[in-house]
Structure formats: C-alpha cells, structure tokens
Image (cartoon, rainbow, N blue to C red; front, side, top):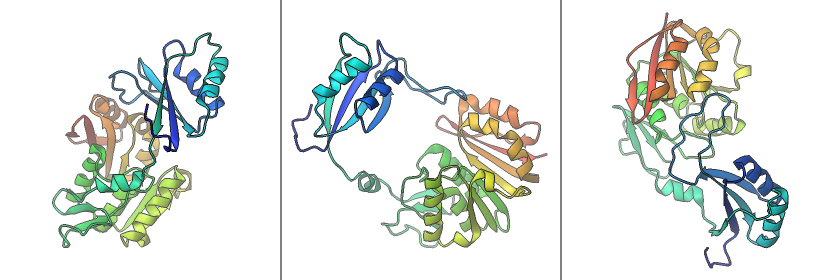
Length: 299
C-alpha cells in the first residue's frame, strides 16, 4: 500500500473465492463504494461471451473505489456483515493517485494512417500529410479512435471503397469515426446510429470538428426512418449483437449493396457469416490479430 496520505482515492480489492463476484460487488456498494470493477485475479483471458452471459474469470478480483477519507475498518465490518462471513476474505488496500487520465491518454495518441489516403489525427497535432483525407479526433468519452483492430479494419475498408455519392449507415457509431471517414471519403449521406446518448454527443462534436455535420444524421435505432435503405451498412459491434440484428440489416441494405461487419473474433466469424448467409454473399474475411471483418453483398 502507498504511504501517500494525500492520494484522493482508496481501492479495496477482494478475490472471489468463497463468495461470487456479484455478492462481493453488492457488499462493496452497500458499504459505500463509489464504483466497483471486476478484473482477472490470475492470467485467464475472457473473450466475447455468448448472448446473455456475464463474462467472468475463474478467479475474479473485485475492487471497490472509496473516498480517501473513508474509514476502511468500518467498511470491512460492513462487508463482513453483508457477506455473513465469520472471517472476511483477504483484502488489499491501495491509494490511487489523482491524474488527468484524458491528458495522459492524449500523450500516447498520435496520427495514424489507414490504407492509402486516410489519416486519424489528434486535434493537438498537425496532420503529417495535409493533402490526405484527415480526420481530426480527440478521444472524448465514446469508443473509437482507430487504435483497435476492429476499427482499423473498418477504416481500411472505407479507404479502399468507392463511396462517392453513396449512402451509408454506421450502426453503433461510438465516436462517429467511421461515419466521419465515410463522409470525408465522398459519401453523399451518412446515418450514424447508437443507443448511447454520450456516443451521439461525441459523434456530433467530432462531425462538427471535421466539417461534415451537414451530411451526417445522428439518431437512435428506433428513430431511423422506417423505409431507409442504404448502399453500405457498416457495424463494428459484438458478434452476438450482430446475429440478433440479421432481419434489421437485411432490410436496410439495397440490392447489391454492401454489408460490412466487424467486432468479430476469428472463432465466431463462421457463425456470424452463416446467420447472414441467406441475404448476403460474403467475400473472404479480412483478419487482423484475432479479429475479423466480413464483407457481404446483398443478394
């Protein structure tokens, strides 16, 4: 444990051995934890769960975040009572330093090129190639900067596609990075869809920063026009969710239009392709690390 008494947060961690992670989580929240996180207590990766499953490790560490002035001995007694435990599971206490996490993240965020002409550049840096198609982006609170293999696969596909005068639907837009890339690469109209209001706000800000707000329509799935059909539908979301959206995607893509699916682990690619196979003919998968992009053509 750190000896810095000025650190503003305390982290109390317990390993889920005699209690389930859910029991520990509930007990920590009852004891006043401001937030609770679950992490691997060993070295076991958890890949994408099946729909409806909760991804947990064989040995899970549950950590509660408390204000620095919290009396941890009182918290421990509350935990012992909530868990009906004669002896409290072994606890580890750490002090968490205050840090400007966004600034620390930005220090490591540098311009990246995707394909031949597309660059993602932080707003704090000048684009390496001013004549390229440059997207200015800050991380904000929504997912999507291009660093993850699934996003990179989508950006590279967009860079190589002929999008001039085409319509595109970005389903699960996150930061708006893919919708913005499509607009800057020539798409006539782009619909950016997400269920998270924070993602729509981030996408709106980023579209404005990149001067394409007039060609991007931000909306929730339920607010999409009922008859909307597009030339390209792009979805970078988890495989289980993709399979649930087969009917929706099939009716949203024009005949001979393109369906671009990412966010898929390699081991799940065959199942996802099979789910869409009645409506789409697929090209060979594109792979990066353990992730796959599928391109289907509407039958």
